[in-house]
Every structure is written in structure tokens, then in C-alpha cells.
Image (tube, rainbow, N blue to C red; front, side, top):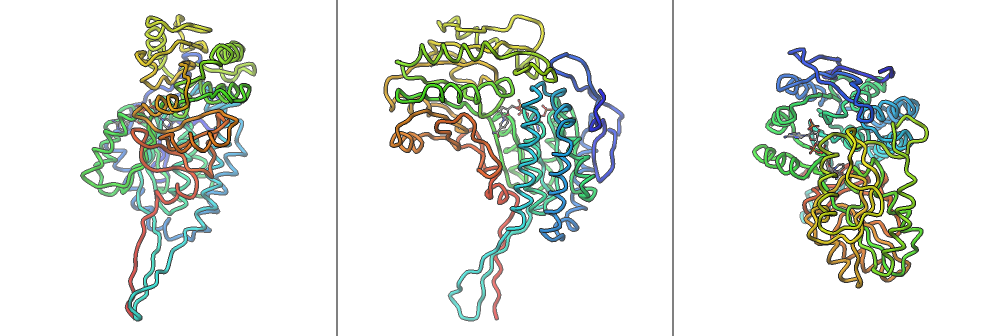
Amino acid sequence: MDNPHLKQACYVSGQWISARSGATFPVTDPASGETIAAVPDCGAEETQAAIIAAERALPGWRALTAEQRSDCLIRLHDLMLGNLTTLAELLVCENGKPRAEAEGEIRYAAGFVRWFAAEGRRIYGETIPASHPDKRLLVTRQPVGVCALITPWNFPCAMLARKLAPALAAGCTVVAKPAEETPLSALALAALCEQAGIPGGVVNVVTSRAPEVVGGVLTASPVVRKLSFTGSTEVGELLMTQCAPTLKRLSLELGGSAPLIVFKDADLKKAVDGAMASKYRNCGQTCVASNRFLIHDSLVERFAAMVTSRSSQLQQGHGLKASTTIGPMISRSARDKVARLVSDAISKGATVWCGGPPTGSGLFVAPTVLTGITGEMDLWREEIFGPVVAIRSFWHEEDAVTLANATPYGLAAYFFTEDLARSWRVSEALDFGMVGVNTGMMSTPQAPFGGVKRSGIGREGSRHGLDEYLELKYTCIAL
Ligand code: NAP
């Protein structure tokens, strides 16, 4: 593949390295099935070297002024936007998303870098009135230390930037492990960090197809003081257990099963726009994708017809083709999971409005709209992670809220209504970390992103995202 950001080596201690064993693993374009690169298949030794590099770089990095660190991040932001087109092309080739979405992801990722470049200059402390006249009580905020960042394949640039930027702004150093399917965007970001003048060892990226080995070393190390993980709930829970013996700080951004509720008084056009935006981005493979559509019984036929008409217009293809508006699934197992869920729903009585179980040999899955969904169907209980609109009807507001909350997940929820009182009532009743009212898109660097229940712990983005990388220190001075 010909791309100026293509790096086929890991970045440790400011050096571009191979695995000690020389082993590599292939990176595949999911749209074409072609191998586009080979990156080092690192193990325990390289991960340990990266931890040591991050530990050595920590004193120098945290000693810089907030303004000096902010300047580095501003340079990184400018480099990301200056290389938007080529970074997006790299992302399309490893992940499959259409070019417009990939460009949107790079802008979104750069937005976090700019946000935390500014927030890092506002790491303020406190003074507390003492009970004794000869004491002065101070609170300062200090970097947590060396952080491990483990990221998924669905937003390979943005998920890393959302962790990296606050970590660096706070004065932490990092060891990042990107997903096996999409390591190239992370390596490209590391190269831009190097160009931005961030000292060697501050940012380290280790690629591997043995995540349990790299994850094992990162979680067992007493040097690593924090783990920030985005991925599945199962792996998040495993990593939390592994972090227990060294009591690490944890940020876990895990799975979701977002409800999208359309009330009787909704503006149907807004609801359909919201459904399209929240469902089909990245071919339905987002943690905040609407997973369970709850539509007022009187609107089901009209809503399904409108969504079917819009879904049928989506153009599948390679993300670099100008006409493409929806790409492939990331992998065979992701495609097979959607096939299983759709077949199960049909066998239990769902009506197919468009699409259906994938039949071809590639990784493309046609946008699918189903009505007549019930709680017995697997797709109502599992995170679909694919381009499937699964519609269930309801009559009363309380029933919709009860059904929406009846999930172990609690990341994002959406609902549509033109009634102001209902907006407040339902928003407060939904047991989710993020609620979109009359919108299907709500993520932005200045707002806190994260979930409750089995969707995770902590928040990314916003001023709260910086606190995840800071410890409070209380100092008591006796005069
Ligand atoms: P995953 O299998 O949990 O993988 C995520 C990352 O964890 C990858 O880098 C993976 O490496 C690594 N990993 C896997 N097993 C590991 C282990 N034993 N120790 C250490 N690391 C390990 O998740 P996924 O299927 O790629 O991602 C989809 C999931 O992420 C969905 O559930 C989605 O909802 C969630 N997600 C959540 C958010 C959020 O912000 N809440 C955002 C995006 C995605 P390999 O690639 O080598 O397996």
C-alpha cells in the first residue's frame, strides 16, 4: 500500500522497532480481503521494554510546564488536520469505513487533542480553610504516571486520541496497544507525535496478535498506574480482575445496547434522520449504535417504511470509492454474528422489510430492517454491532422506558418527542450515561463520554476526561 503514514514497525523509546523474534502479522483490507501491511507481532519482552521507556520518560515529561505540553499537543493537532486526507485513506484501508466517515473520525480525534491541549492548562488546585490558625491546607493535581491504553478497531484513531491527549496533557506517559485488525492508524499517530516534538518514550505503541500476553504484562506491572481500555465488556471485566493485585486506576469504555425510542408526538423526519445517523455509521459497528428500536405502535409502519427507503439507498462498496456510503464488516466473525442474529429473529417471526441474513462470501452485510421483534429474539438481548434496524412496538411511555432500561448495558440512549415535559421525564428515567433527545449524534470532545452498569467506568472527553489521568494530592502546611 502506498501511503505516507504507513509504518510497519512499533514505536518504543523513540525508536521504530521490530519484534525481537522478527515475527509479524498481516493487516487486511476488509473490503477487498487483500493484505495491505505486516506489523511486528510483539510479546512480553517488547511490552516490558515499552513500560521501561515510559517510566524513564515520565520525570522529564511531567516536569514540563503545562504550556509546553499544550504546545506539543497543538502541533500534533495541526499535523493531524494537515494530513487529514492521507490519514483518512489509511484508516479506510484497514477498517473499511467510507472516506467521509474516516475524515470525520480524524477531525473528531484531532478535536480531542485540541480540547485537552487547552484543558491541560487549567489543572487548577484548591486551598481549603483550616480549623487551626497555624495550618494551611492545599490540594494539587498531579499526573497518575505511566498509563496503558488498549483500543478497539472500530475507531482506531479516535479511540486512541481520546485517551492519549488527556494522558499527555496531564503529564503522564503511555504504552498503547491498538487492535490487531487496525494497528496502522495508531502507528501513524505515533509518527505524528514524533514529528510534533513529543520526546521519545513518552508515547510507545506495541502491536501484537497475542493481546492476552501484552495485556498480561501491562496489567501485572506495578509501574503501570492506570489502564484505560475501550472494547468488549468481557475483556474489560477480565482486565479489571487482572488489575486488582496492583490496584490500578481504571477507565473502561465497554459495550452498549442503545435503545432508540420514538414517541407518538415525535417529529418522524427527525426520528428517521436520527435512526440513520445512529445506526449505520461504521456499518453499525459503534458502541453507541442504536441497537433496540422502540417505536410507538401507531407509527411502526410509517417509520419502518421511511427507514427502509433510506436504508435501500445506501451504497455498499470500498470506502475509497466516491459513491460508497456503507462499508464492510470488520471480520468474518463479525459478519457471522449478524447473520446468526438476523436468522434467529426471522425464525422467531420477525418481518423483513429490506436486507436479510448475508449470503455472499465477502464481509458485506446489506442494511436490514426488521419489525415484529420480541424479547425472545437474541438480537434484542445482544449487542448486534451490524447494520440491522430491529423494531419493537410499544403503547405507553412507562413501558418504553422499562423496556429501554431492561439491559445490563447503560452507555447511550436516544429518544424522539416534541413534548418538553416528556423530554425531561424520560431523560431522567433512562439508566444510561448519555442521552440524545431528538438527535442520533451526540459525541463531541467537550462532553463526557461513558456509560453505567456493564458499559463501563469513568468518562472520556470533557473536563472530566482529564481527571481520569490526575491524582489529587493534599498538602497540610503547619506554619
Ligand atoms: P475486544 O475484543 O474487547 O478488543 C478490544 C481491544 O482489547 C483490542 O485491542 C484487543 O486486541 C484487546 N484485547 C482482547 N483481548 C485482550 C486481553 N485478554 N487482554 C488485553 N487486551 C485484549 O473488543 P472489539 O470486539 O475489538 O470491540 C468492540 C467492542 O468495543 C464492542 O463491545 C463495543 O461496544 C466496544 N466499544 C466501546 C466503546 C465505548 O467507548 N464504550 C467504543 C468503541 C467500542 P486484539 O485486537 O488483538 O484482539
